[in-house]
Image 1 (cartoon, rainbow, N blue to C red):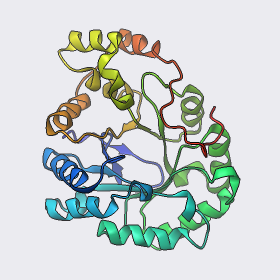
Image 2 (image 1 turned 45 degrees about the vertical axis):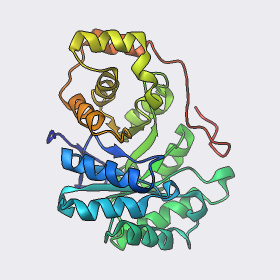
Image 3 (image 1 turned 90 degrees about the vertical axis):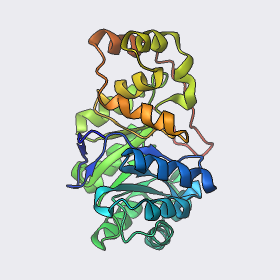
Image 4 (image 1 turned 180 degrees about the vertical axis):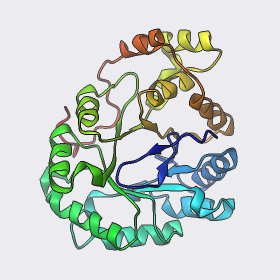
Length: 278
């Protein structure tokens, strides 16, 4: 795998730009996916408390034989654990499941629904978790411009490693992207393949044909060339291997411009407790 790495703010731990997502993967499926990905060279593994697979991810990591120092592991705190007295105990439970002394990055998975828990309280608890050595960096997920602004005002942008948000050719999330870039806040793109919808898009198919590659590689390369990290979920070794090709695929300015026209605001992750999107 490429040695190229994104130095996430707030930490000297390099976040590999192409990671392995585990959303919707459970049981033996996630064990096989993580074990297979690690054998192919993936070193960035993304999970979350609500995924219900931290124990299986931990098992796969433990059985892989990959040295801990080579791995970048992210988990996310669920909304029920955002209160100051619940966050650290929940993170300790996650670490037990993952069989790790610390994770590299801990994110607020979603802003507290309805603002039930003040963001400042959650951020303070995250900073305390970092001080205690339970996580090497902290960050955000699914945060709007207003919520990013509030987080930055409280802890400073240098304390926030990333904001993990949905970005793919059909949801380019430009307000969030523009604000984050202006502030110097790194972004991680989840659902980068739009649940596989990129595979049938005529523009992406045409660009892929011109490069002798796949629409999935094109979508990932488009995101990587913009400086985002990407965490596609894949259970098939052939797809995992193919996705790694995005690290070396270079799209032309014309390719990038054509993909920019595909934005149609097609958001795939918007639960009823989601914030008011930008």
